[in-house]
Length: 312
Image (tube, rainbow, N blue to C red; front, side, top):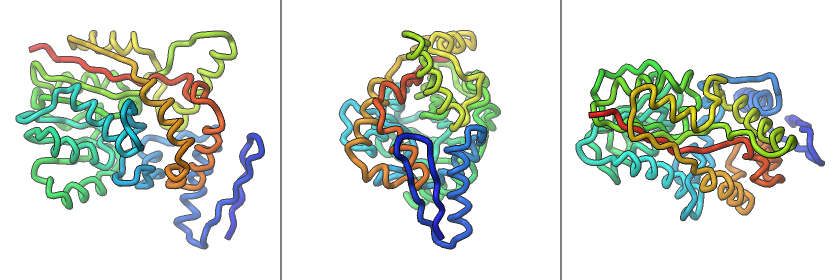
């Protein structure tokens, strides 16, 4: 069976070859509706159920955009971002770590091997990811020290003042709301505990009318397709203020966007095999985006590394 999909844009015509498989057809139609229907807004669980385990990385199942100062490929860039979070959190032996939005557990296994905290507890709302991540941790022989649970970042089933570190790698923009997550992080952290978040924000509007329009379109496309609540659409100064109002100290909200978006864009342009690992419909959208300069594609997106300490 052939399903033809026509997408607006310069000379784009893609034929997606599908076998007579109801599940494969359902997935393809789900992708088409998600990617090309401007009125379709999936929830967080719907997005990640659709993406499933089709990660563009070769070795693991990372879904983050990576940190690229020295990375040679998407796998090492994804690990580098996870380790940047761990290093900023000063994660180490003896720590009780809470990882919120752990995906398929790659970062938790990496941290346990390289930083050796006493225990990592994870919370994730997507049941399909929880099941896969738990099995991977079990297969790695780390189940006694990594406890991956299904649960919400804004209503954590975690005791007060019971963890030393709360971390969230490229997921807090989903939380409804991020401010509620800050409140819960404050509650579960012990005095002197640290919160570290790698997060996506909108850029402040700047430049002429066309530049501002491009920024708005860039943010809208990401926010609408990746379930970012409107309440989370604020820039770095507001981010800092919300942490301060919650009571955190030693707050740092640093943009690392130049080490994320542009090098990722350049890598994907030069390595088509990475894009080939995506679902055919997602591959179509990625190839279309790669026709344009990174400054336009990501013009409305900031990327921050935020850290804060609960006073002792």
